[in-house]
Image 1 (spheres, rainbow, N blue to C red):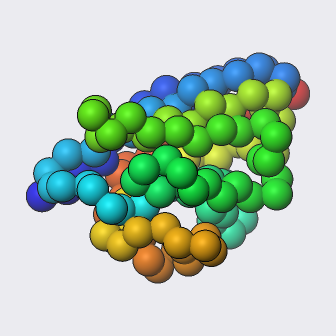
Image 2 (cartoon, one colour):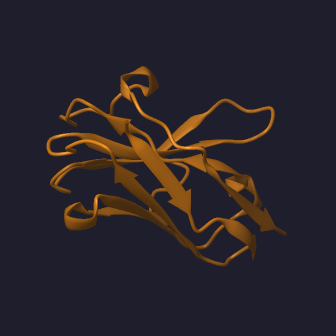
Length: 126
């Protein structure tokens, strides 16, 4: 059974930083894609960042490019999201899904992600 446990969320002032972590377990993750999505109240979910298993391919939403960095540590089956220069608009629940398939030359659509964690709340105050 796949388990994804997100951590690192919290309350931060605008301009601050947070680092989210997502520990995965329960299967072999070689060749998979991992990502960070976020869901804010009253808004559509957004794919924030995606990363291939080998870390060689990444995609970012325009809204976070230059501020957020996704990375992974395959030895620990963990993916990270470093978030800098946070804005109130970044307030959301952040989820770390995994796709059984790999990440190619285009970002994966949401439905391609098979496993989801419970999420971690990020709140940015103005």
